[in-house]
Picture 1 (cartoon, rainbow, N blue to C red):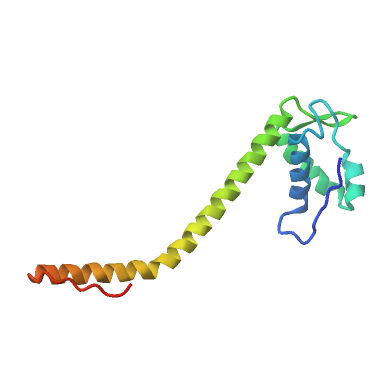
Picture 2: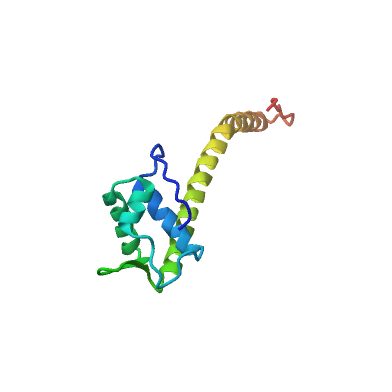
Length: 142
């Protein structure tokens, strides 16, 4: 497996960083169906993390159907592992995009709120002028 950076200062838990890296490696074809992924102990030593942390990552990948434990042999990519990895990555990217879009829309809404207030004022004045029979319409500076 390629070097797997683990950032202990990241808000993303270390087990999740490990699972994400393995997921990306499987989706990219680094590990093909039927092939083993690095062992729990080897990965824990390489990353200088507690083996329980790697175990938690492996359990998540197994729940997703990406890998399968073979007694005494280790963890292997399942036949559907590549599709499962890609599906999970697409779902994650979609969720991130949706979150960013919602954040941006909230920001745009906050910027437009003062303008909408001025437009309401303009509409109110126009309605008042027109209802009084006055055909001259006052238009304030927006």
